[in-house]
Image (cartoon, rainbow, N blue to C red):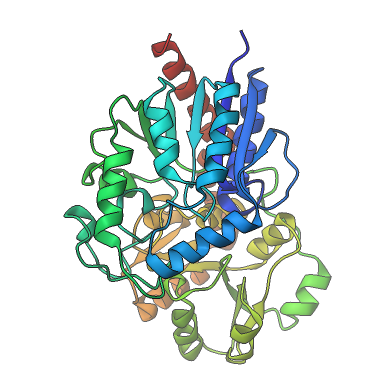
Amino acid sequence: MVRRVLQINTVVNTGSTGHIAEELGKKIMNEKWESYIAYGRGNKNSSSILLHIGNKCSVLSHVMLTRMFDLHGVGSFFSTKKFIKILNKINPDIIQLHNIHGYYLNYKLLFSYLSRHNIPIVWTFHDCWPYTGHCAYYTFAKCSEWKTGCAKCHSKYSYPTSWFLSNSKRNYLTKKEYFCLPNLNITIVTPSEWLHRQVTESFLNKYPVVTINNGINLDIFYRKEISNDLINRYNPEKKRVILGVSNVWTERKGLHDFIKLADIIDNTVLIILIGLNNEQIKKLPKNIIGIKHTDSAEQLAEFYSMANVFFNPTYEDNFPTVNIESQACGTPVVTYDVGGSSENVYEKTGFTVPVGMVDVALEKMNIIFSRNQELCIRETIEFSKQYNKDVAFDKYIGLYKKLMAENL
């Protein structure tokens, strides 16, 4: 009998969660199982069988429902009904949920369906949205309302943004109702121990929680020879390089702390930031080079390899893979001790420092600059090998087999 695994995520084969779903799909097919990925946005190629949920109109109406009334996750009614009919025909042995937020899915309809069918569900939490009344993260806002019911929202304007109303308490109660419906066979996966602990304090603590760290592709992220073109273009004076990388540089990613850092480094050090928009680049001081994006993961690995230290001043995060990618390229990491960011760094491969302490971060960077570089590179690369993506995906496959056996 052919097994079927169906994943659901906002995007496919793009962004961190989309790449995770794609690589996991390949691992599923290696088991001679059928792999399906249902997604809401984007049009990327995939090795799995793709199921597109909704269209531009349904996404737009869901966005407006969110912006006007703070009712994210309960739009896309007809597109979700249509998807459930397809889901019923496929009759998967495992449903793997990733991000079910993102303006494409009605979670009330989906979980009502799942509660009526004994399908094992593996739900990977890439953020905190499943158990809050609004936000995807709350540490930057220093909020603990999610423990008691989200009576007052401190993050109405954060993703998923609401311009007018705040329905955080209603959202919280609705999620609690539908995510805890009878007969749901859910196993929660968290990429970090920090998020594992958070889930056990939430209304989802009735479900088993397993920690599986995110992995990276070590065939892409490894120490590379730096091309003369890259050096001549970005660092012709061959200064020490502090690198920062983000898909989007928001306040919680710590862009303002790189500006502070630029004020206190000497002229032998250069900062390179990747992922900025045009307006952000225009406002940078002279000792920061801003880059909108890289052409490929391979080129990003070359930037990691060129840097002397990777600085990740994130104010809230789950288990940032950029820390691992940098170390796989032999570049130590300095990061804030927040969320799961400190879990993939240890003293020989970098440092964690208190949130917002830019001066302390620079002290740690200077320690890294003073170390034996060849030894530091070797130790950092060796540490990163435990985060090979195949190790993480093998754990998922093992979990699927266990749940399918229990469901016979």
